[in-house]
Image 1: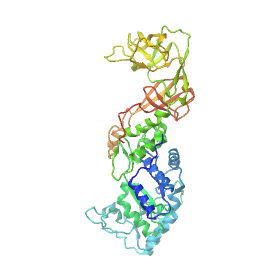
Image 2 (image 1 turned 60 degrees about the horizontal axis):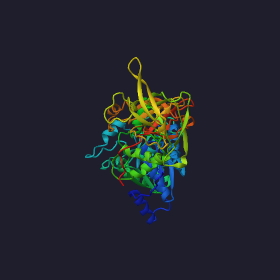
Image 3 (image 1 turned 90 degrees about the vertical axis):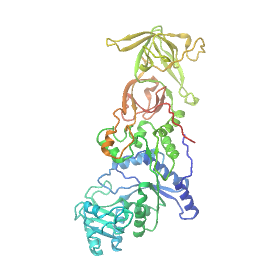
Image 4 (image 1 turned 90 degrees about the horizontal axis):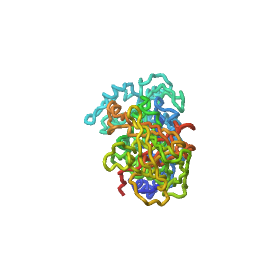
Length: 552
């Protein structure tokens, strides 16, 4: 269920006030990812915020690719981002690329030079760093800061024409080397990069820096509220400076909010790419990854992610959200929508010695006891079945209510069985149980003769469908740290366990991404990457229960 609410937050309040004061005729927001990796759950928060804010006030949202860095961007990422935004349930009003504005950005830079607000600088990166100063000391002006307008125009055009090497020259804004805000100390706004661009090819070797390009993109598109994360708060004076000095017709308002941080979760595209490149994970869509593609493949639904993003809300200060909150919302969603069925992940064969050898009977069960409209299914039952290995103990502790020699348990939807004999191989491993059943105890028959405390799930050995089960634990063992080496040391070597077992025969025709509740095991989804007609592969999304509660 999609719990859509227009809960109040400080950004929404700003929009309401702007509309009341007639600052804007129409609200226009944007979601502006750089196509240098796959989107993750942190981006989902921004997607939900931008699209639903505009939707509430009957405005528009643009999907814009901030593709100003040709060495890191790729068409693969562009297509994955479009797929993710659509899958989450949002339709953009316009699709734009920052690279489509390169000509205008260049012309605006020429305007800055003519106004004496930008200059070509020959300092290298290390020299520029040494000139920058500190938070307590002003920076030193570049020796090239006072070049004439004519010389700057000539050099800038030659930079565009490819006459210089990477890093040989940059264009810097001329602002204030003594500013207490380090971002205002003559920042670089253009650099030379001889690299093929995914959208413009080899047309340009001169590329704008993000802090210069982004405000221009917003102004060109008429964005009214440019919503970004808190790390850009110190960049806002530069954002406003660029819009003003480039003499843009429209002035977008930059508003910062706290980014999403989740326990035991990597939220850095650079680190996520490292996991992919080092083959720590099975690609960007590995179900252990916090990417939208990974969550989708694991079995999360768009509704659960949207509801999670709405619940965490929008704040001005950073905090860390418990990963269990995200899991809470997928449980809440699937509890009503997922059919119930039985699966045995670690099989142990049980032979019911007093059941007729050639008999197969069909037992009936609800697909979802809470929703009659989901119908019923037939479950075959015969002399040989599989149960979970953990549901039998030869020498059980007290209060162990499952199967052990001489004990009786109920088989879900079936009969009572009692363990009579344990069969072992030459190494002493238990390979089979011999049991008897009581035909009077059939489920639904109204039998009241005696009670048993344990109920086991099972599958019929003759008709069961072989399946692979993938069980996931957090990829990061501890809280994420900034140091990359420490980060790689935090990888959980036991984050994936692959088991070979069986599911009910009604699972033969499952489709990719179908979701089920496996009795006692949790919620599972059919893996789209490895499932074939001959082998079903299921990803565990979440276990059945959690102690986590949403505070209302």
